[in-house]
Image (cartoon, rainbow, N blue to C red; front, side):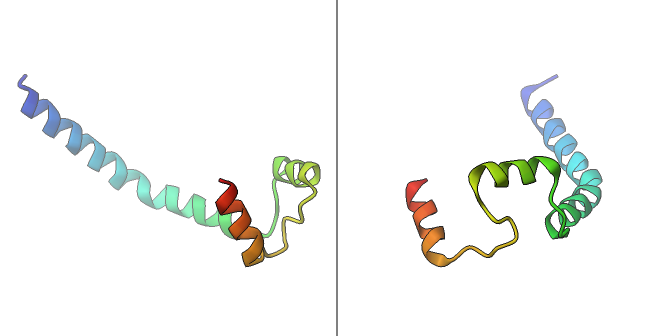
Length: 69
């Protein structure tokens, strides 16, 4: 098999995998990001960090986080 054909087959396989998974994966991500509940691990991390997971982040805190990163 030539390298060009192998490359095209790989691209086609990637496109097919994305076409098959975009709807279920998108629905799952939307459900996870819009649910008001927090997972047990999230609650633990919030408690350890002393953060209110339901509070909005102010622009000054966001700016400090971006600059620290």
